[in-house]
Image 1 (cartoon, rainbow, N blue to C red):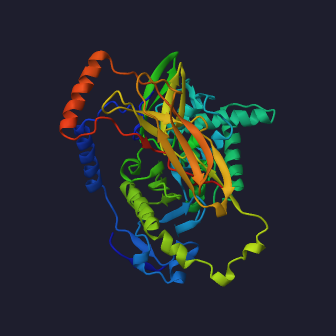
Image 2 (cartoon, rainbow, N blue to C red):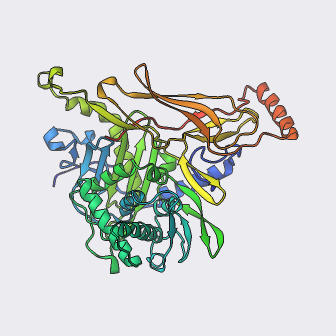
Image 3 (cartoon, one colour):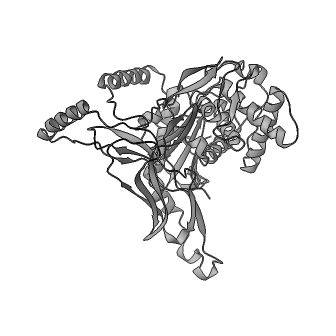
Length: 501
């Protein structure tokens, strides 16, 4: 192998996902920044390297004649970077079967979402509660919705939650076959479904033996996958709105029923890109001794492309995030030139008359990277956070907004050009209730409107009382004197149309 060596509501933590009438204390930001810097400079970081055998758009760097400075400088033993069309932009040993630890849970979430809906009941069995290692803090007998359990699977990387979800979905699978079974039998049926899904997706280096990714002691059962296969799983999972809205939390509170009472659990994601790298809309970390530090992430900058990076076998936990960022920086800086280098010569391009019919593309329209949790009685649901809308009775208050059709998609001709989204925010004052129309979202191809929907409030907001109004008026007076904004700014958070087929 030749190397080119170089140096190298529960409250959600998404922007705008909670009531923005609460100002964040600057001291918290400073403390978190110092903590991150301490972690960054005390963690063992490795020099990256570039390899002549690294693959760019299915060709090695040697075949392309690419110099070292034209490749991403990363440390990981295995890596893959694909886009929403499935194109492999970069690969390092991307098809070699290795351990992927908790990245297994991406397939668990994807398959479970095909057999359960958000309100399906998940009961934590003794078998699920006793899996061990990474845990969401669940106890045997805990009850929650599938939507809640997904947060425990994807944010906290709970092995307990992954097994509980697998057993619930496995029971549904067995029932469809006219069968039933205990927790172990249900989980085994679910793992079979995971492997069937892998075959459906065309994964060539993947075998699942459990829903959580543990690979030692009683779980050393020969499972494996590859960087490219795992990136494909993440791409497919991001096509499920239920998974997409639950894989981007850096921190979230969930409510479970325990012994007849409601208990709040705070979950944390160990990924650092969610808060530090613009456009990060999914993150799943993993670690075992066999797999090493690994991570799968997604980035969408709203430019019509979404990217999925998988880093396996990194030299340290902080290094996996540095490698991921290096991959994204590289593709964002070089995509156009790489595409130009692979352009089919004009004389080889198909003639218009040879096309049997206009090619069409299907797009998913609601691709918000964050979500908002709504409470209706005892039922909690998670919906895409499409926008934050200003409440004009307050100085700095915004509230979450979404759309009713959160799974909206549309098929349009390729020749029609890219889809562009437009938003109109209404002036909102007085009492706001969840479901009130507060704006309008539309998508256009050229000059044609191809889809439109009302933007609706996702939470209640009370107007100021008379004494609060007096305070607001005084605040606005002084803000006006110093040229400061007197009303918050509405913001569209939906990333735009994402190609799905």
